[in-house]
Length: 71
Image (cartoon, rainbow, N blue to C red; front, top):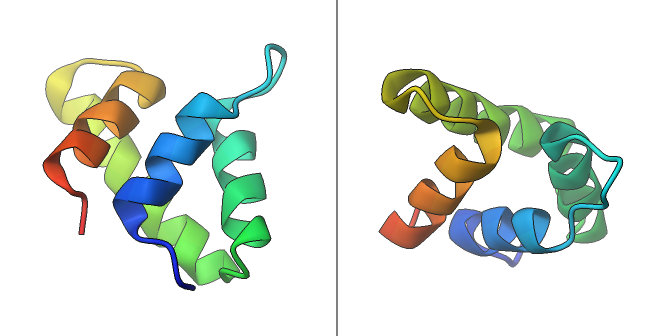
């Protein structure tokens, strides 16, 4: 996969459809970048952990991780 984790998270937030969960958006973005299911699982685990830690939703957590560089 050529894209960085931060770039994938930013793209998933930006490209999320109105009726789509963040998880589905991230999965679509990872597949578009030829990532594996393991890549997806690693990213979503990091996002969920951050969301739980900060008491935020997944989108806010993904934005925070992307802003930090997430790699």
